[in-house]
Length: 309
Image (cartoon, rainbow, N blue to C red):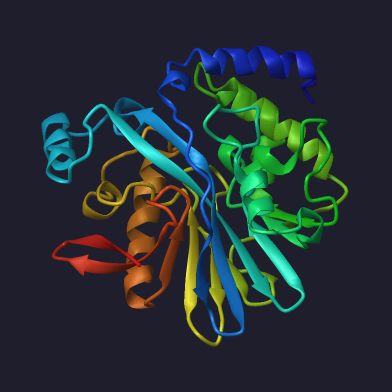
């Protein structure tokens, strides 16, 4: 097994800093959480920050003129895309379940706001009982540690798909990263090392926590999972990075996204997920859709549309 130490981590982080992105970020203001009443439970959306990414990082191999026209029509810049990072907290019975953990302070300067936002909302990090990961990218898993590399949620159980763990814990992870993203693998491995004694691995279809079902949404990463929350009031789907743009992901789910590790599988996943969202009338909760990331999905001819709630 390849050894990933702090020196390697720092070198790789510097490489990503040179990826041409960090200077485009801005700091969001802290805001109150948005709450969904699910009947016997509640779901809250908190912000870890906002990042602005060059469009070529996300939608490179698509019809450029059509892409730019679509973005212009919705009043969006054609060179950069602003992406919030929404993190959801489910309170049900005696359990407080965090879906993903933000990025912490070691990824990008505009992120890592989650601990302060949770503190502002009087959420006790020591009271988090479970942390459920959609996948192991930096803005979803790096935030489990504090400035001293100790776990921020020390009393929690942690859950990630078996396929996701197997990939990022392997020697193949580092060698398969594109230039400038080596720190994705280094950072995931360092977090995994802290979780080995308390991680729960699962497969698609498992009820990992009562009323929380794991759904295979691989493509963005090898073991990416969405989660269906079933309650007496309504059902919510935690989508992670399966759907990342409020128009393009729905109007053109067939457009390949450069941030997806398996672009062809990710396209199939988006279409399959959009079908389920409309047929089963889920509320959608997504990491990178406009804060708080909640909405409904409707058919729009041969495509779909996202309606914020």
